Amino acid sequence: MHGIVLFAHGARDPEWARPFEGIRDRIRVRRPEFPVELAFLDFMTPKLDEAVDTLVGKGVAAITIFPLFMAPGGHIRNDLPRIAEELRKSHPGVPIAIQTAIGESPELLEAIAGWILDGVD
Amino acid sequence: MHGIVLFAHGARDPEWARPFEGIRDRIRVRRPEFPVELAFLDFMTPKLDEAVDTLVGKGVAAITIFPLFMAPGGHIRNDLPRIAEELRKSHPGVPIAIQTAIGESPELLEAIAGWILDGVD
Figure 1: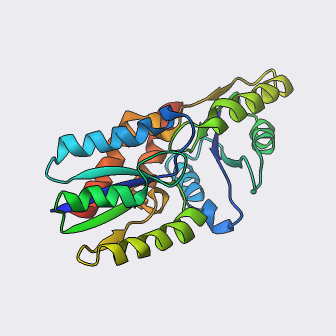
Figure 2: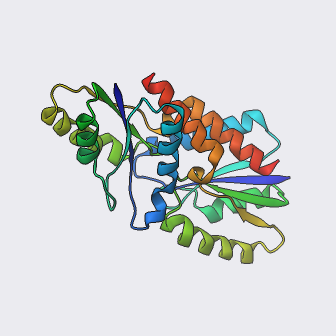
């Protein structure tokens, strides 16, 4: 069983989390066999360690963290690998992988370009 | 002729702009008749007023600003409407519309959920 963490920046306004909740809910509907949890870097909870603890508590054999950031900045290049390294030490039996940012996926850049063109056509 | 501004946060690392350049280039290839410019809130140039000036200089009849943010926080709720209001005063003949954030598009949330599931399957 593979666990998914959707990792977002966080903000003071609780409404800010809506898009990430929307992605989580879509994953749960489409593939309920994948446990999926949100996690936030700042301002919001759960934090990454809590989300990973939840997934490990559900018995996942591996975890992939998806950074839901448009572009890879300092949070993804510096903060996330550091936190992930600590998590790997706490959970040596569960491989923890980190995916690329959204804007590093050619498929999603194509989808965003298409959405923009639909908006002006 | 309708002009497009792709509005992103900006960062100190020039590499950070790559995803937005990728979206711009895809739009230019798919629909070269739409003039499209990047604009950044902070750290990077051009700023929004420069991008709008460039499009107006190309003779666009209207402009749509697409905020390439995953979720609508203070930058989109407060900064962007304030800047857009100033731009409308400077360019009264060119309607300037603001689109929703990426994470407010159900179609893009679906695409992101699909990309995540492809990454763990």
